[in-house]
Image 1 (cartoon, rainbow, N blue to C red):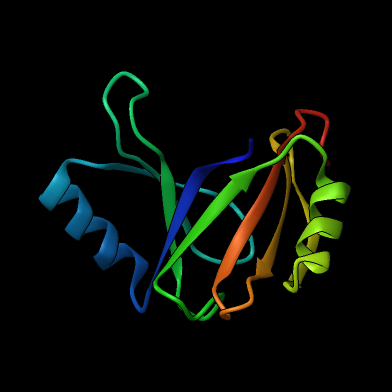
Image 2 (cartoon, one colour):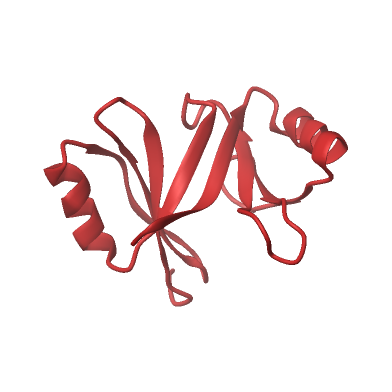
Length: 121
């Protein structure tokens, strides 16, 4: 069974949002290099909990995006479409980490699909 492994919180000001979560919950953040602000969030002690990120609201409009880890990326994309969902961003590499894409469910909610692959480029 596939499970949620990552969340994303969108914000008008990602740095301000990160400071809020840092102060309110003790989360730590690390900026990812790339084309837009993406602050990786570490939320749990001793690897408990789900980690995520804060990113600019211009990327995806909803406030929280969950990412689901899958065993077979292409099969999962086909399953999303067959279930009535749609892809909203094509598969892309997170270099040295894995593959990611965004989809929409039948209610218009965006979620991520992710596959580990240290060879991703």
